Length: 457
Image 1 (tube, rainbow, N blue to C red):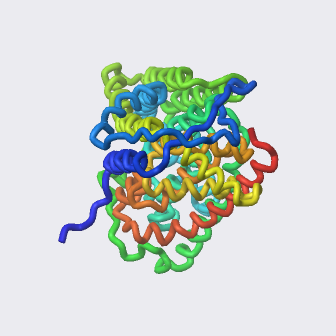
Image 2: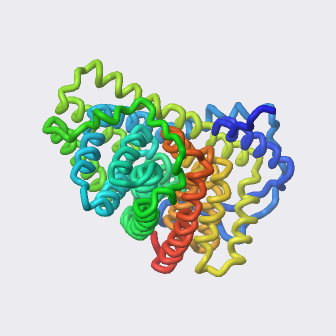
Image 3: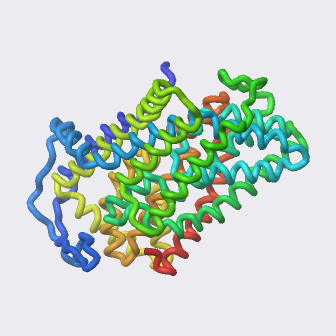
């Protein structure tokens, strides 16, 4: 009997497209009236829902919607390609790798502080950068952890779980938050202040969990979940750990200035996809120049980085097609009406956490954050309007549900990339991460209830 393989994300989305087509035959067609409010946002009119004549979508025609999906996601896709190319050059300079290794060499007697510091660093780095870019750092994290008396799981946690906080809170996450806010007709990266605040409790809980586990390993190595497991560090040379050198200083300055400028624009102006793309392009170009990287090498790393984003772009276009199918079948508003009615059954205080858990369930089927935003936010945005929840809170519920759930899924790219690089059995990782995920759910629910109470907008 062949071993079951988790389907590729694209295959899952195509199945979802077929399901969407089937739903247009099953779910009655309906429609809300819509108006443009004083803030120039298109909103549904509460109580205006009505059933209309059915317009089912033939399953043989679902691929006709892909081109329109790609066109609809065009701005986001182009911004992703530019960001991937720029970051490809930055990562090729070795600045990030050298900084992490240099810090670890000075860790004697301060292991707990080093773990906490590095997790904070990777949390900050993943505010604007997709966690997948840091998968090559997995062997580096493991070597640093083992050198300090911990195990491979702590090494993975330093990078992946630290990064998970910065990525999942979505302060400046272009593919996920950018997509969700675009669909919700919110300025890109608006509401950043509260999302940055959310990182603090998440990071405290995550660091405390990792250090608690690490303390047990130091006291008794047999308590390690991977004790006796042969680990594979890939092609990483443990005897040639890089160091942060003088040549890396200009690159670090360029990256810090670029990210600082992006934060400044997002806070004091309006950061568009066009502006984000330009900043990443200049970041990559300047990093390559100050590192004296040959032009051909810069071009190669830029193309490799952009290539890494191409799959995300395709997934995004296909995911947008799902919304197109549901819209063509006029069933979107019927689903919105049903979900609004269901959500309204819950007390107002817990409506945002309930939306959070709805996204967790959906994330088991669509792990692409940008794809999930394209599929779900057209539904959840009007639902939030109807139950009196701010659109920023709805986006935050999406961020938490999509982001943190990924680290317990066997078909999430980042998780399988990290644990796969070290040959850590997923079952071992799941036993470790599922408890932390439960803590994340509690923290996320509390932060969403607070967002509802303060009128986060």
